[in-house]
Image (cartoon, rainbow, N blue to C red; front, side, top):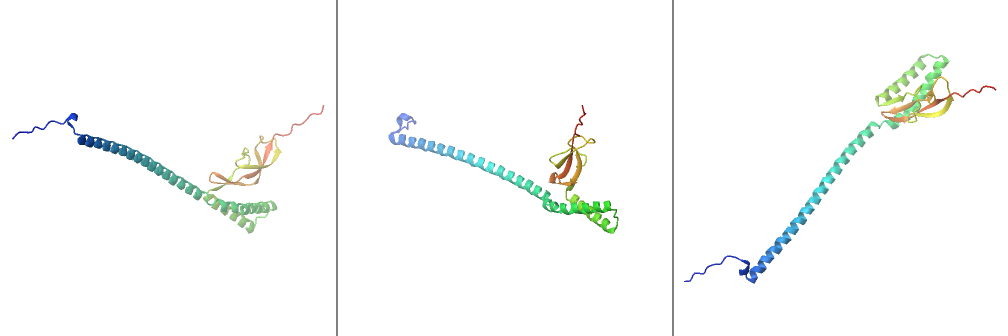
Length: 190
């Protein structure tokens, strides 16, 4: 028996079939690498999209909470605005009664109702705009007239014609006011 020695593998010893199989394996390996790279790229794109979508949703939730809180904070504004005309009338009634010298139970009752309504509004964040003697602020006041005045510097509120109101930090109704101007210079006769 003769022993057949197996020779070590070398590219020169390959048969054509072995060469073709090796090329096929290398080609398949390259295709797999390409598919892997494509899958990794898609994975990264999907991950980035998921992260972006998650961040957008979290921002949406925060915005909705903020909008809902603001809506709740100012929900009483339409009702308060509607009540202001009635409050003005109660104030006019008590002022007229005081000017006429009336102090009876009816006047006291009207004054009490006026005070109660202002108290209720205050509990819900509605407060008066302090205007008398204050510098004119177009965000808080609506000037309906200007009046020369020596006692106050120009652009100072000298009279409040209609009270202004705020709800929290928003103007519900600006105060209607008369604003001072510099007095007219007097001319000396020549």
